[in-house]
Length: 278
Image (tube, rainbow, N blue to C red; front, side, top):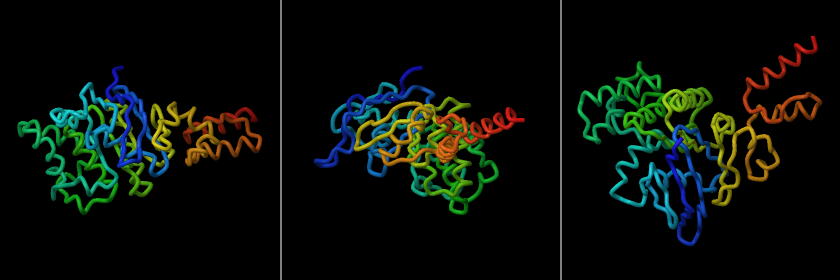
């Protein structure tokens, strides 16, 4: 697969303080990358650099080969890599759901018939067909976030960057939004860059990158990352709840795999043990 996003020795500074320092990163087309790190580690800055909201102090960021510091390419860059923020109210601009989703493709100057197709496809992708005529402010937090995702989808991006999209949601809303994100990646092949502080969300990714003090501290698969609990704690992070439970069970003598990161894995292991005992 081709690299869709590339950071070449990127540093970004606010004044004399380096928020990100010497970042090298490649994200393949169709990959699901989760970005973790304690507050202030540089996660949101990384996201804004991809979308061209910020420009590196030194180094280069490329989106499908386009240099984000080239102002002439910003419109094309943002069509290729769409951004979803933590608070959906900051992205919702219209008084009707379908009008909000149509806003971005209208600004692209598309034919009305094409806009209609894109809006219908986007609303179906996020599962909000019943709410297409509703006022966004009447929706739940999770529904609003799905409207924000649909608005980005209507631009038909190849990559979506999501900056803690579930941070303001309840567990049900989080689950629904993550279900949409997974489907967009697995079924439509959209590259996903998810910034999150929920470890169980990061466990769904193909790869995890952890930022610490503005540098890449860890860059590996979820199983390898979360199997090293001590390393996670040293970085100010936790492991997924199911991994923590598994490690406690191992300490109590159960022969389980310490790289268990999904509830289904733990359930299957426990059922297998019960069958073997019978």
